[in-house]
Length: 312
Image 1 (cartoon, helix red, strand yellow):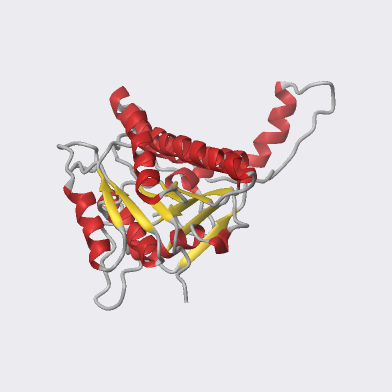
Image 2 (tube, rainbow, N blue to C red):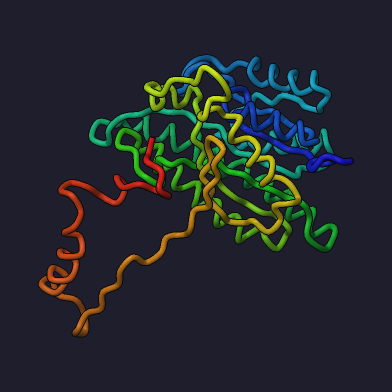
């Protein structure tokens, strides 16, 4: 019996640690040949010297388990290095079939005290890093499709966050980047569907070095798998990368602890029409002020529960 991803090749960015590591291991377990990408900096804020060790260790772990993997230590936020990453996968495996974007950093601060560099660096790694790899992978799939005269196999799995869905007061840069990734995903899904490629995004909740502060008060269970273990996320990534998910495109899914929730696109919650040619201030005041009067003082849409899940 063949494995779901047998004969396919994949790139996983930020795969030297945390979520990216278990995602790379899962794709390999399902049969894919994997390029393990990680820039290898020691600090979760993107500080420290770049190191080949994290990517090479995960690639070695895959090979030790009988899989096929090689390491790439370039910076996906650099346009040329992202292109070289895709070129490596194509050169080594003949083609690229799956792209999982996971690389990211944190530089948390309240919006009123955030420095320009803290904003730019997080947007660069998360949002530009996602764009860079997608841009070169998309060109590869388009060229292959034109060559064969029809659809080819392609899967993009991007990493967003509940910080975008429910807000995160001390992470304006991170929340904005993760929201941008959702927009990038839906645009990519529409652009590449005719070539046989799907693009989806996940909002994972997992205990990693990126979230060590968020989940600091939640102890690991003495027995069984931690509900916040990254291993809960990896199977969904493997599924979205597989032929079984061919009909899933442009979707956003929240995943953690044995739960997957499909997020609907925003819907209109209320609609108001002017009784004259255009609204006046007084008319808007009479319509909108009572509508929002039920919210507790100071509460905004981002402070409420999302999908029935309290924001971590």
